[in-house]
Amino acid sequence: MKMVAPWTRFYSNSCCLCCHVRTGTILLGVWYLIINAVVLLILLSALADPDQYHFSSSELGGDFEFMDDANMCIAIAISLLMILICAMATYGAYKQRAAWIIPFFCYQIFDFALNTLVAVTVLVYPNSIQEYIRQLPPNFPYRDDIMSVNPTCLVLIILLFISIILTFKGYLISCVWNCYRYINGRNSSDVLVYVTSNDTTVLLPPYDDAAVNSTAKEPPPPYVSA
Image 1 (cartoon, rainbow, N blue to C red):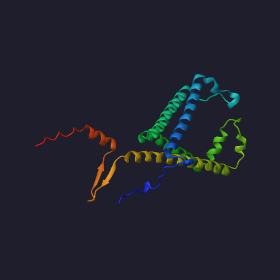
Image 2: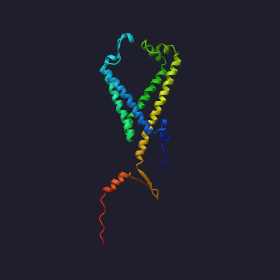
Image 3: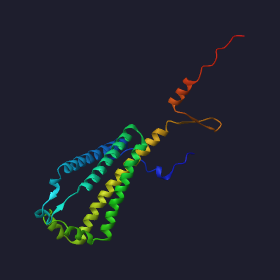
Image 4: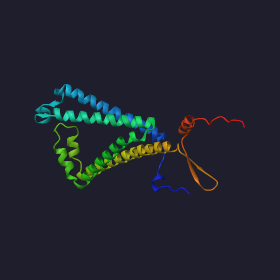
């Protein structure tokens, strides 16, 4: 009798919109790839023309530079790294290479952990939201309306919003994980198991390896009649 691990029961080959997890991972990788490519273009344009990201004192109440050259270069390097990770995940899902999906999966876990940390911070320090809003510029959209909201209701709204985001990100993590397991299972299914009549198990090699090995062997010598 074949033993099945408990975590293998929670496994599905389908994701949202009733598409396959491999298709969903490809679409997710392309979507992240497009977003990071747009961010990279914005950063490159800001690096080429830094004056458009320099706000005057009348706009922010003080001379404030949005990003300096060092931070801009770091942001560009992060965008390039994200483009590489997303491209690897898309290629790995398309070519059915599970190892190429691991960096993107690790990035999803890291992003989920950061959002969880934000939710815990809001829950433990609810007054930090009001302090953060007070530090916003006076002409920030809806700043006064947000300040007029009851602090308890504001914390509940933010926690609800973060919970929805965490649920969605958790679902995307499960989709990529199921795609990784699907590709691993598909690659390992090339090895066939043949059970003989005397309860012995023989592992048969893949068909391609067997064909190559059979052609590589020299034919037997011709028979000589006595």
